[in-house]
Length: 156
Image (cartoon, rainbow, N blue to C red; front, side):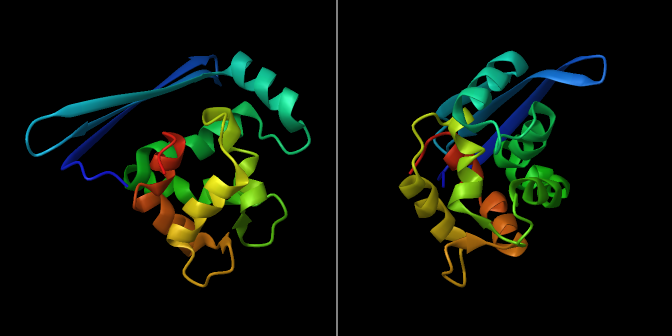
């Protein structure tokens, strides 16, 4: 998680009709000394669908659902109303928990070099009962602490 004193996240969704065709998140951290660092995650529908199909089409989210999961990951506590929907979409087996495999269906699109080990490392930061899975409360904690954004930005 970042030690920045201020965090700003700007979301831009480009639509054609009702369909999102591109999402862009610009994330700016500002420290107490005034230094800033900016990160950007941009995903276009065509690029996402190509990557998702090349990985594992049976577990890939639709682009529309992907954007619903990405929003709380990038915006953290500022998108708290979207966390339950993101959780439901990631919980592919409807077990009431998200494990590393379910998270792995989402993360490689925005962090191509993500591994099960890296995902498990981040899961453990919010996994209060040490079952290597996240229930809704633990997932909400992961998002609200900015751990989801750290994952999306490839931080350890």
